[in-house]
Image: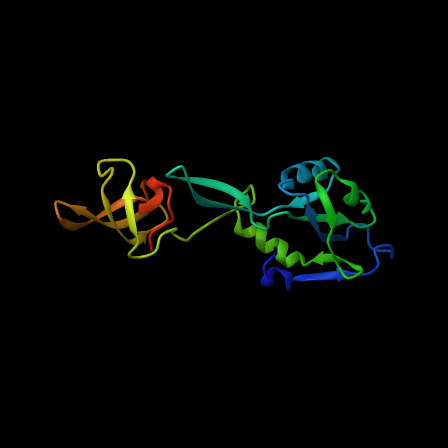
Length: 198
């Protein structure tokens, strides 16, 4: 679902048939079929529409290892620009991968250009936004999965920039502060497949 902040920027349009300047561009909100954002984007692009599909790169724990994955920032939602007077609106309804054009009541949802610009500005050339938070909490028990400290256990202390973390490792019965790559540590319960210890 779209966030409340994002929804406040969405407005409605009641009459798509009235005369408008040929260069006028309106952004509308589409809802895709499950996991069909890419398919819908490809088909809309082939039809000449400009698409905005913000994505988020974030770490996910898979098989005891952290992996960077890219997912839609707003799952199943796409933003499409329509040049009124030049591009037809009707094909949006029948494009492969699209479930429906979003409405608020009887009106099609129209999205503020300022919101589109903010989403485009915040991501990279591919529209990918970076997830900035560490997946650990201070005091959480962790295990090192690779490198010279492999299999040692310790306590997560804090993040150090975007790529490294400070951990208090149990070495020879004493807690020693070390700086590691963030991808080398996992929650303590991961190896056994259980829930994370808190």
